Every structure is written in C-alpha cells, then in structure tokens.
Length: 363
Image (cartoon, rainbow, N blue to C red; front, side):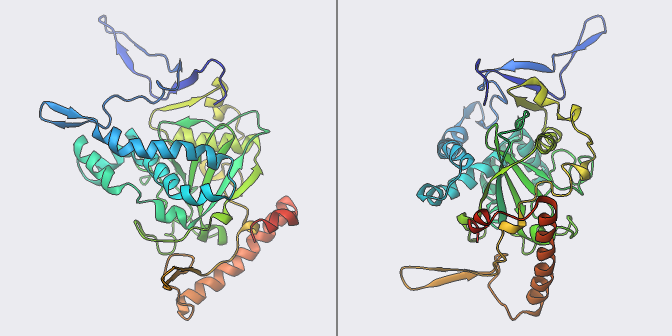
C-alpha cells in the first residue's frame, strides 16, 4: 500500500470505553497510526489448548502454506494475465480467499453461531472442516478485477477482508446482523475482495448477470458446496477503470461490514460517507454497481473436459449434469437469454458500444 513511512491509518469503529475511579470515563483514540504487522493483530486467535498446554499448530501448519502460496497470487491476480501461473495458481488463490473469509474474528464468530457454540476450540475445528466451502459457487460466478488508477480515493481494507453485498439485505436486516453476511448462494450477492490500492476482485453470480432484474434474494441455480466444477480462466474481466464515486461506494460497504477495524494509507479514505452523495444501501454506486460488463460474458450452456485415459466429464453452466431436453432447464435458459440480451443493450445505451478489440478478448 502507498505509505512511505510504512504506517497506516487504523480506525476503530467501536473504541474502548475506559472508566475512571471518580465515575467518569473516556474513549480510547479511534484513529491511530500502525505498522502493517500491528494492523488486525489478535493474539492467540488460532491457539488450541489442551489443559495447561497450548499449540499454534493451526497457524503454522494450516494457514502457513495457505498464506505462503496465496499472498504471491494476490499480487499476480492484481495484474492478471492468462498464462501458466494462472492455471497452476487458481485453486490456491481460491483457498486463500476462502481462508480470509472464515479465519477472521467475525468469521470465527459466524462459525460459533453456525455450530451453536460459544466454545472457541469448537469454532476452530469447524473452520478447518468448512474451509473451501465457498469455492464452488465462486468458480461458477463471473469474475471482474476493477481498477481505480485515476481515482483520488483508493481501496481500503478491513478486519473482515472478504466482503459480501446484496442490495436487498441492509446491514441491520436479520440476515446480516453480526456476525452474519449476505450469503453467496443468493442470486444478487456480490463478493468483494480488495487486492491492493488500485485493484479489487468482484465475483457475481452468473444468473444475476443474465437477469439483473430478478429478485436478489432468490437462490441462484443449483447452489452447493464442496462440489467439483469447471472455471474458465479466459473469462476473468480486467482493465475497467472505475470512478471515485464507485470506489467510495465499495469502501462504504467494506466499512459497514467490518467487525471493528478498517485501515488505509490516507486518513480521508476511512470516511467514504463524507464524500458520498447517498448512503442508501440499495442505491449505492448506481444501477450497475458491482456488475461486470455483460457484453464480455458468453452465453455458455455446457462445459466438457476430456482426460488422457479417454474418459470425459461435463456439466452445464450451473454445475448440473447437462440435460438440454429438460423442459425446466429450457424454460429458464430461454428466459435468461432474453433478459441477458436486454441487459447488454442497456450497457450499450449507458456506456456506448463495446470496443471490438475488447469484445474479442472474451469471445
């Protein structure tokens, strides 16, 4: 991150209240300057206890390899190009993102709620069991890495770095009250993961790209976890420069979905709400907020993979065994195609025709 002194502005959204002997009180400073190792530091977060003995085996043996491979891949995907490293690294990158979602204090609190326990040890056990659960749905989504090179405001990060946003699920809704987040199995939920100051990965469910006017709270087609699926690396969208207003909206989502802390290279970036025209949740960023360009998305309905032994494996775009004769599948596909064509035309009207050279990259 951009900071010559190596320190960042670190904002506590819920500063500690300190009581005085005389009955008075004060709050600790909400804003501090910290080095990178001090940001989001939480001692013994992954420590397992056995009576009087303790071990950090999860930190060293479980997260060690994930972080070792993942941190390099974050830099690679920030400047993504299709090559051998992309093929070799995509699975490690997905594992890293998934770990970043569940290993945080908020993620562990979510696991406690899921497991109906207050026991920290049990939440750690659940974490190792449920790690990689989100990868299937993410692989079947549409990926875009947006850029903000020309924006005065850059991306911030929080103590919960993998954020989700669904315009119909306000932060105070029962499905998003702490420690809950908008589920990625819902059609209109986007996943947001800042890669660096100027790059942010956004993953959107394919069905929502095809039918943006559908109910965002409806489940996507065939939602499932820990399932085998296919991801086409050629489809990752890159190069779109977004406005400062767009960056502010993303930062606002990141801040509102944090547990307690957000950090940035510049103090003013931590307060996106001060520069935003509106903070109404379902109006953030405008009509096309977090949507990838539908004109760069093919209407693919089938994937086939062949193996050296002569066997083959295939699925449709939602991970089902392909069955074009199923009337339900045909009805859905006809509806999606019609709405998808309308979505592409609306982008032409709003942003002008897509450059042919850019279109050819994805077709």
